[in-house]
Structure formats: structure tokens, C-alpha cells
Length: 593
Image (tube, rainbow, N blue to C red; front, side, top):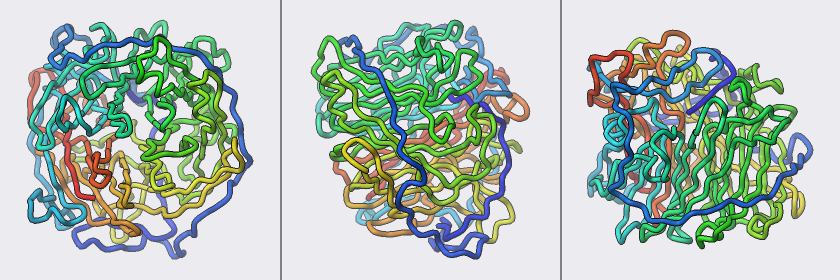
């Protein structure tokens, strides 16, 4: 689920510096600009802001995951569609079924198909595994209805004695072998998290913690929209199938400053050696205005041990520069760190979050110091500064093969997945770009590799941008970049992409250790049909919904990358019901790091 308080705007960005153009020739070309690349920026552009939180405890439950579980839901034909508002909404996930019409496939020279062959296994970026994941038919089979669009969680680890890839999409979860054979599922997420059939489930995340050999899964559970009541289910899934679970309240009913009870939208996931971190965008009781981000830290050791109560620390109404923060992304910490770091981008220029910024060059850098305090029942220190980055811009509409556009209302330049690895933060977001030789503005990825510093024990100090740049390709719109770096320093970005002649497809770029530029675009799946989802019938300005985020994950070997992204697929579900259809799919692949 993904709400928004502003309408989409078309912007033109003349990006200063060098843009990595991904094409079949793998070359770097300049953007329409004459200035040299911006040097790395150090030191904060504003003072440190400190935040006060509250400590409390959660009741936990233990159990065992039933990999054959199902949940009873109403039938597809009788399930009412959850309306997508064209104004003031990033679009609640909508109930749907699907149909699709075949359209021409662009196989232009700027696309290099990935080839999963043993002969290429020694080359960085070669595709090792490549298979279809959950699609709208699978979701309907598991739940009795399906949602549009898919939001994806992905994790890779050991479960019941074998290596598995877990994909969780909206309200369904499946377990696969590395070759794509189905181990279990797709399961209804209501069954996975032990929720009643009437509970609305959305926005899942997934992570395998190698240090404890445990999977962590989260999903937003909405009890009611009127009155607002919602929580985030946090599930620890052990290798033997045993589970520990807590329900993290994100309603914050006592938060009068935020006009709560609030809806905690699109939970973001982070983890370090001490805690699991869940961040949400707070929507006030009217579901109209975002009132800032909220961050909850949950004791990892207490959750894993099956303690009856699990300590948490919560920080609400988070803002910087007088602007409520959206898309506050806690880092997935690969290895160890004395602090948990977070990043956010800035999309607004007003406290009410109603006036989007066409361009920005500011990021929020956050640190949670003394994270072990959560387990002790006391508060950690949360601080933030703003730092100056390369320029990024509000994305333009991603025109696609059905004459409409993907993600018209849902795509923006909020921060996507963040990882802390090798002493650096790596992050990416969508940005409008101009590619040399391309007459139109496109959507690409702005990416950052940041070395954070602490001013003292408790306060974050600033950052040095080790590397930063852009990824784009002429004639294509790239959507929802998800970035990951291996322990050896290779970096990969996965995404969906489309154009007026390219059905929605999936792909990635990769760079080797120490490299500044990325490879050409590796295409992993070419969508066989145009987007025929029912959201495309909603009318302007909604156009077509698209997945709100992608996912990447490190293989347990610490070197190779796994990706999950959304293309269109050919499966048909209820093709005779045009207002209740969708043809989304997901695709999973592994590349060598």
C-alpha cells in the first residue's frame, strides 16, 4: 500500500556530472550538462537534531509455521474492490483479477539479455538462476482474491535443511529452491502471520540474518480503516520452522501531535546485531496528511529467545528542516556496526507535505546510538543531520505499451532500500533524468555510497560521499531501484523498466569492486503483454499502478545477488470482468557478484 498527499508533476532535470548510461555497449556518456562531476561532500549542511522516544514492551507468541496452511477468504467474484482514489492517494492496494493483451516487444540493441549458462558462471554479472515468482493468479489461489500492485520482500537462507529463496508479495508467500522449484506455497500471509481472514495484509519485507540463521518477515496488518487500527506483524522464522512473533502497534493512538490514531503506511525494514527496525509513514486520522515518519526498534535477542515480552523503543512525528520525513529507510546491516544508520530523501518543501520539490540535493542521515539499550528496557539515542548530495528529481510518468503510464501516482523520489556494508551506506531512489541523445525526460536511478561519521558517542556527525551517480538508459523508464553491495565491494541494482514499445520487464546493472560505473543493462525477463491491470481503467491521473518497491538480497555466501521485480505475465484471471482484473507477475534471479 502506498498513499501520497500530492499530485504527480513532470520535471526536467539537467543533471550535472557523469551519468552511467546502460546500453548494449556498456559505455559512460555525459548528461546534457557542461559542468564536471560534483566532488564528494563531507560535513553536514545543518546542525544535529535529537529526538525523544518512548520505551515499552510487546507480548510475543511462539509457534511453528505450517507450510501447507491456507486461510479462508471470500471468493474473487464476491470480494468488493478497494477503490483507488485519484486525488490525495498513492493508491491503496486494490482487489483484482486479470487479463492481458499481447503487444509488440522491443528488442532494441540497448538491451542485452541475461544468459544463465555454466560457461558464464565466472563472470561478474552473469545470471546464475532465473525463474518466475508469485503472480496474480498465485495470489488469488492463496487468498481468494488478489491485490494490485505487488510489493515484494525477498530473502535467501536455510530452512528445514535446504537452501531456500523466500518471496513474499502483498499477502502471499512462497518458498523456492535456487533453481525455482516450489518448496512450499504460495501461502496466504494471513496464515503465515496467524491473522484472521478478514485482516488486510500488505507491504511485506523479508530478511535472512546469517548471524542467527533466522528469517525475519514483516507485513502490515490493517484491522480497520474506520476507526483506524493497524499494526506490523514481525515474525522470526527459525531454520527448523519454529516461530516467534510480535505485533508492533503503528496506530500511535496517544500521539495527539500527529492527529492520531494514525495509519502506519508501507513499513520499511532494517536490522543490526541488537534490533529489528521498522519505519512507517504516518498518515493522520483523516488519511489525508502525512505527519512524519515513525521508527520502532524491537529487541532482536528477546524476539529470538521466545521471551514472553519483547522490549521496543518508538520515535514518532519525525521531521527534519521543519518537514515531516517520508520514506525513512533503516539500513540492513551486513556485518556489525556500533550504530544503526538510516537515510531519507526530501520530496516536499512544506511542513504539511503538500508541495513536492521538483529537484533536491539533500539527504537526511540518521543514527541510532547505543542500540543495545532497547533490550535493557531503556532508550537509545536517535539523532539526524542533513547532508548535501548529488541532485535528484521527481520522476516523470513512465510511458508504457498500452498508451498509458506505469506508476503515475505511485512513483516518486523517496528513498528505496538501504544497506550498511563495508563501513558504507548504499542506497538508491528514482529520479527524472535526461540521457544524451534522448529527446525525452526519462526515469532512472540516483545512487549513493555514503560513509557516515559520528560527531560523538551519541550524535551523528555527517557523511562523505564515497561514490554517487545515476543509472539510466536511452528510451527506457526505470522503476523502483533496489541496490545491494557484496562484502567484496561489488554493487548491483535491480529494477523494472518499460517504454512505449517495451512491455514492463525486469533487469539489473552491476559494477565490480572499486568500479565507479555500472555495466550495460542485463534483461532478465521480457514482459509478454502490456499492462492490463484494472488500475489502468481508473482514468487520469491514476493511469496504471505498479509495484511500490523492488527487492535485492545477498546470497548467504556474501558475494552473489538475488533480485525480485515486477513484469507483466500472460496468465489470465477473470478476463470477462474488466474492472476486476490484473496481470502482474514477479521474477526472481541470481547474479554472480
